[in-house]
Image (cartoon, rainbow, N blue to C red; front, top):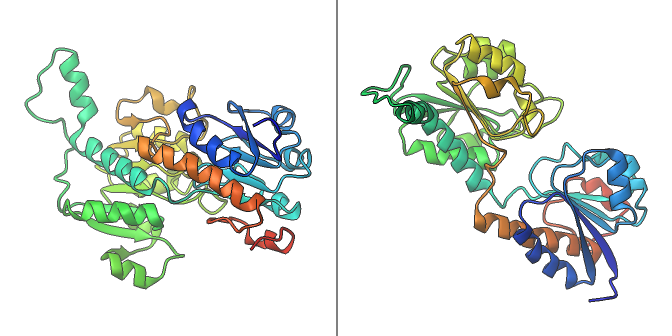
Length: 331
């Protein structure tokens, strides 16, 4: 196609293969897909996205200045759940729809959180390293809980937290939840017990966080929270990096305040200077909880379709800033 009606800038690449389904969906409405790797400065973002009718963003920051450089922009789509990298207030003011994709990899993230819980409980990486170094441990180094009969505390009971609850129930864990924005009826439906955040920290054997990142949740697990936790407990984070204070967590792990952690997301990514890297009682994964081949293909299709919806005057499936509808007429 040589004459395009729209310019869509895609910033950040999961895989090259995943770009093709997105391109196909965009070309159905005459939109050109222009791809850049992750951009880390506002200057590069302005230069690369200049004149865009829409942006698809993996993890780069989108400031007001970036948006103002593309006055025809109608949509900024974040390829995951969190939208803390986008200046939503400015987007609304400028008549730009902010869209996220919160429902493609719910089960993948829940599965990853469960995998980290199991790996921590069975101390799999420690056993693996011992065998590779020539040891043959006949027991697992303590602490090793039974898992069944233990307590999982879930912070944030949205779709992913609920999927995790369904999974761990089969293992015989007691489930505590802290989420002030969820109806008591939902807790009852899932057979979980709502508690205060402090109580959750104090009694849980595993604390898994599943909140968005905002001013209320930033460092929700901090030094004060970690000191409340039991010495045999674990922190699991597959949400957003800054919901856990990485320095405080490293201090807690080094001091054996808690037994360990499973961390998929970090305050700075990649976490090259993160103190967690040097600790043996934490399992680290590379912000990959979302990943499965089918989920990535579904994401690519969804991204193309959501951009197409907005540019053709339709309301997207997941509009983060509905207030924009007063300026951006969508049906």
